[in-house]
Image 1 (spheres, rainbow, N blue to C red):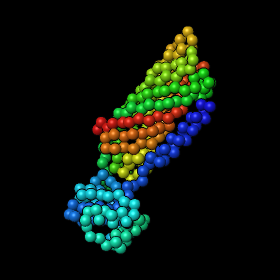
Image 2: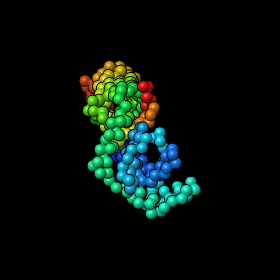
Image 3: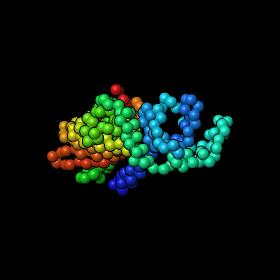
Image 4: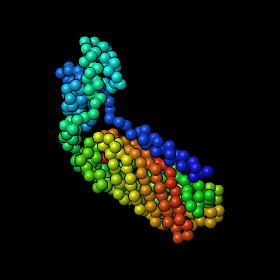
Length: 286
């Protein structure tokens, strides 16, 4: 029963991860500082600029030159923006610009996007701290005895900055270290204690601005556990292995993430495995 519930939770989380990964913002009406109003489609977004496309083709616009940016779903909504602003408009021209913006980028226009990526790169080392909570289900010999438990973590991550840095080598990992407290119990049997690990963290972007990432971490470590079974008590310092795979969205200073988590605790008599779901928030220090 527990395994079935965990499987259902994992499927739900994977679905949520897919739904959380946003597409490129479809901002169709832009007003520049000089009063010019543009209708089309934003094809790529970066920290300092965007690539916009309409009947004139694709071109870069600096964010400092933008007064307002409106999200619309059809050219009729672009017309509504004009009406709201009390501006004259040509419906045919607006429709043509909107439809031109929907078209795929040409090879030449893709080169423009690549150039803007390079211009917006922000190299350097970044570091952040995080808090994470997890619900875990047991597997193996202790599955029936202590079917589930909870773990809370605090930790630190550091590596090359990846926001607006599409030129980063994704195979070069960050470093992630975490420490936490776990507790598993049922009836008279329980074990609890401190656990921690450290290891590489890979982050693979799924959006042009690199704010949406799929992450994988492998962390060997140790746990200091207190085991109780009725009136019998024992302590153990043992090897532990943690791993996560999940999704993260980064703002400028804060990030939110959701993970599928696995934990293995070594014992000479019993191999303990558990898996579950965790979520948390991180704060950028530099």
